[in-house]
Amino acid sequence: AVPLEITGLGKRYAGSTDRYAVRDLSFRVERGQVLGLLGPNGAGKTTTLRMLMGLITPDAGEIRVFGHAIRPGAPVLSRVGAFVEGPGFLPHLSGRANLELYWQATGRPAEEAHLDEALEIAGLGDALERAVRTYSQGMRQRLAIAQAMLGLPDLLILDEPTNGLDPPQIREMRNVMVRYAEGGRTVIVSSHLLAEVEQTCTHLVVMDRGRLVTAGPVAEITGSG
Ligand code: ADP
Ligand code: ADP
Image 1 (cartoon, rainbow, N blue to C red):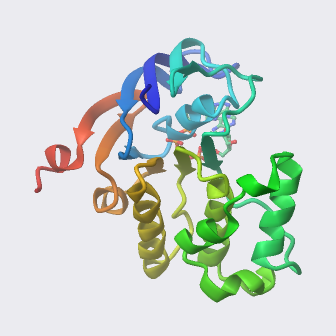
Image 2 (cartoon, helix red, strand yellow):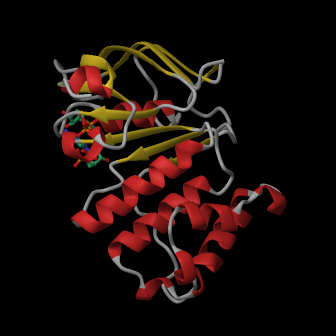
């Protein structure tokens, strides 16, 4: 089954009378792709990602993740990991200890947590033994990504992971995504900046005002390559 298939997806928030946050959205993501969900603020990226994480209910359409229909309240597939926004870490504990606590809270078996591999892909190096309060913003964000990667999910969903980062930290974050996809895993990452996704992603879905503008391989869309 393909990692993600979205068909005719629609969402209108309660209270918003005329406007659909997402309207008639269809696309699919194949194994090993790094898909960039690109669009200006308000395009519907976060709404789309929240629907495919099962956090909010679509008003129309269907989402299939590895062949399973996604419904809110249904258990989150262990094959999916998600970064939404920097979670609150306990500042006096090390990065490693924070991730260990997080994993215990998920209730999943300890041997399914690939702590060292996730931290290595996230590029945290020796910092993982230091208290999180000594981390830069970029390091905290990469720790949050390491947390989403802990179970080495086949599909990793990242909502604006470079928000608030400076250019060197953005480069580092790009490397993290590329390294993660190298194992044949699939990544979906949202951004409002083409420059951020064109070097990292293999494919793009461009959205504006809730609708799909264009989708395809990056080189086709940017006219490069
Ligand atoms: P993006 O992530 O691309 O910035 P969003 O999915 O956050 O876009 O928002 C799409 C549209 O839906 C925007 O017009 C936004 O204001 C609206 N919206 C987002 N969340 C809510 C909400 N909880 N209630 C009402 N409207 C919302
Ligand atoms: P993003 O672009 O990442 O979605 P936003 O600043 O648009 O971030 O949204 C921040 C929060 O506010 C989200 O929880 C979103 O659902 C909510 N939100 C956004 N637009 C609206 C809106 N028009 N009405 C109510 N809540 C909204």
